[in-house]
Amino acid sequence: MIELTQMTPAEFDDYLDHAVRSYGESRIRSGQWQPGEAPELAEKTLRDLLPDGLQTPGHQLLAIRDLDLGRAIGYLWLGLSSHGAEVRAYIYDFVVLEEYRRRGYGKAALQALEDKARGMGVHIIAAHVYSEDYVARALYDQIGYTVDEATLTKLVQ
Image (cartoon, rainbow, N blue to C red):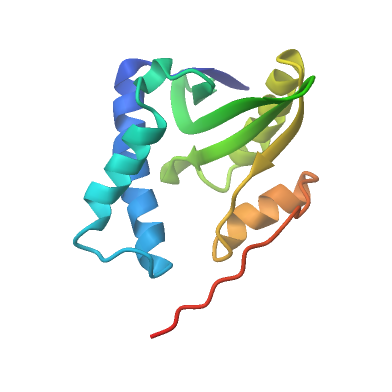
């Protein structure tokens, strides 16, 4: 059984290490950053978005826990915003740790997120997925997410 809980400070530190590496690599692949600058730029970006760490207003940093295993198997970073009377959630990052992938945890975590979102009065959940992340795109498609808009890019060299 999956449960979404607030990250502990130690989990947040582990998550940031993963997020800096992952975000930097995605920016390198897209041609936006050079390898030598990526770690510093990624860390600065994440620190700017989360200036108060776990206590940053408008953000929930959640651990995805498998209650049977008694441990976190991934992380979910959720941003909340109000649009009139409507509350929206944005998935900044969603990670199932590599050793737990392809076991149904991603789908279960997103279903748990929907339950949590309903409880918070959220009516819309949005997520950004890189085009080359076919596994994530397939998961979101499978559980009913639709493309709202697309940004096309071309690397000119």
